[in-house]
Length: 509
Ligand code: FAD
Image (tube, rainbow, N blue to C red; front, side, top):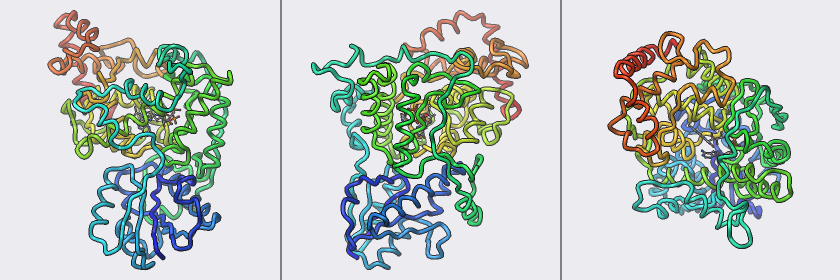
């Protein structure tokens, strides 16, 4: 064997140039290892989905004539770490060269470079051929600036790829951003389109994980795991999304409903992040749907912005600020997560819904992650690193390059405002406006004081109060500070005391 090529669990792209021709001198290596299952406590479905997809990818490569070595978690020769397995396999195959595709996580990038340094054979890194920007493009674009505006980056991407652009180089519809049209709550029970995702019976895989003693959180539901295992299934999910959900995506992007969990979101993040789908093919489909009269411009634009804008942007933030980004804690928050983060068992109905759904399905949509769970964590002063680890574990689409900037930066403001121009906080009023969660809640969304007051309310005012020195000069928070300063001193004191009580009994809320 001349060459060993490592394929990581989030590099399942059959269109990669590596696979253009079958070469008997090349062995592709995939491995299930404890260092990956155990670096954080993962949702059971996340481990199942990734391993099942890796196994299917190995099958696909073999069928296409490639040589593949697949190391299962229970393989007696498995050394349970990627570098250790690579060393053993390189020796076993007497490989002259070992290659890998650039990992997306800093941790693995470091580990592979450190490993490669001491080897007697050649080593080489290949592009993963997935992203639209290099790791460093964002840092170069914003060099020397305090604030890295997503919108600026997004317009550059639209121009570069000619997405939703007129022949004269103007944005279609005369605007770059239709977000103002995209903020509608859902009245009543939403007619959510049928879930087009496949169902897989992963019981055998689950049994193996149990035998090996892999710990996990959430419900395994191993008999019907709904995440695609390959590109063909992922493409079918994409088709169904474009057909049935994209037309409503914009209008209800921020809405939440206790009867419809996903509303009109795509559920494509897993397939994208493990590289079954390419971001450009996904956004081109959305653009075509608009050009063909199937979806409004605001929906197509909103969806495209998430992928060529936010997704690439947070990756740029990650590489520009790692290592060390995960240590940031600009607001000095240290409270541990309440225990209902692992059960969903809280009287706050919005959190019961959003966390319960996350534990049941390994997914929640953006506003549930940002304005229900993240909002509460920030207001309550939970430790941002613990919050980061929870998000990294619970969501099927969570890989550090995308999860960390979203959680620690956008949601917890622990980076001191690199991503978010202001902390994303709200009182119970926002949740009431955008969802039906407050109906039947133990707490009263309008009330600020007393045992039945919605805990978000006092925490919200207390957040501004205790961070006055740091935040009151922020222009975007002017309104909140004007209101706070108009408040009688006694009311401020009372809210402070109420917030203190809430924080003292987080587990019981
Ligand atoms: P849709 O709403 O249909 O959006 C389409 C696609 O746009 C998504 O599939 C995703 O690829 C991309 N996208 C949308 N928003 C973002 C964003 N803010 N950052 C990056 N990509 C985005 N997304 C992840 O992929 N992995 C994570 O670990 C993750 N953690 C998050 C943590 C927090 C605190 C927050 C607020 C957001 C997080 N997101 C994460 C972003 C977003 O919530 C998910 O991408 C989205 O909910 C996935 O569901 P969907 O595929 O139905 O998305």
